[in-house]
Length: 312
Ligand code: NAD
Ligand code: AKB
Figure 1 (spheres, rainbow, N blue to C red):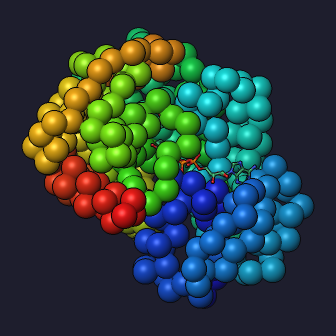
Figure 2 (figure 1 turned 60 degrees about the vertical axis):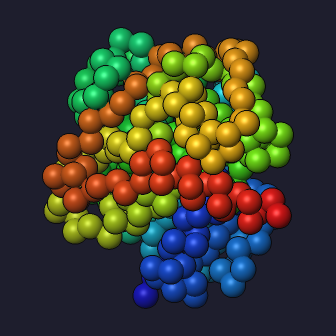
């Protein structure tokens, strides 16, 4: 059996995806890698910079890797601070992996896109799979370009690349890495640690979000769906829960009644306001049977329970 390689394994998604894939495939069939040293228990770890194409090929050949999950990227808020580097990392990293699939060194790729591919001219409610896409962030532009390249490599060279437009992901194992939706993770930490939270968005800023367990299930399901069923080779819309800061705060108050939230919007508000409020994921439901499990209440229970254990 060929192995799977997770690139960017130490990040918010990678930390959970490595565990999910180890359960599904067996830890001996998985390699975790990152540009930073990491510890993934019994799963073998390799130090790997995705921008180093030679080293990437070496790791893939050394471990007989057939499938790559490429998670290394700069997210929306960080990318606005380092636009040229974000473009380089997000695009060249993808090309390095696509080229290896084109030459037959690997067989299958997962590459995540984002709701950031949409922009202010996109319909914001129940955003369709196919619609106007004029992103105004560096991150969104890189993700939209990446989607186009994925579809191109599938059409031209038959590269089996699969993708999801993740909403903002909420989890407690690893902290988020510099996105606009990170508030919906930070708020749980601050609720437990300080009993209060200052939010960089406005009270009624709605964004599409999802609990990590749902996102990992979607990713693994998509990657194990028969090839013929994957009809979209750019990236699938995926919906979970849509809520605003005031709504998540009210949910937390059910568990921590004295919790308070205040607002001090910064540059991330403009990013959030350029993104959808809710997503239509009919195509993912039809093509590969996607359905989310977590709602705001069940996610809040899991987040508070998981974080209490983590923070001691
Ligand atoms: P993250 O920032 O938490 O993790 C990224 C990881 O990549 C980090 O561990 C980092 O050390 C590593 N990395 C950075 N540069 C690297 C390099 N040159 N070579 C190898 N590794 C490198 O990000 P995440 O939240 O886990 O996101 C993973 C992917 O999912 C990204 O493509 C992101 O755009 C996408 N995504 C994430 C979300 C979300 O809410 N987390 C939503 C939509 C899309
Ligand atoms: C971000 O906020 O940048 C990410 C994303 C939605 O892509 N969480």
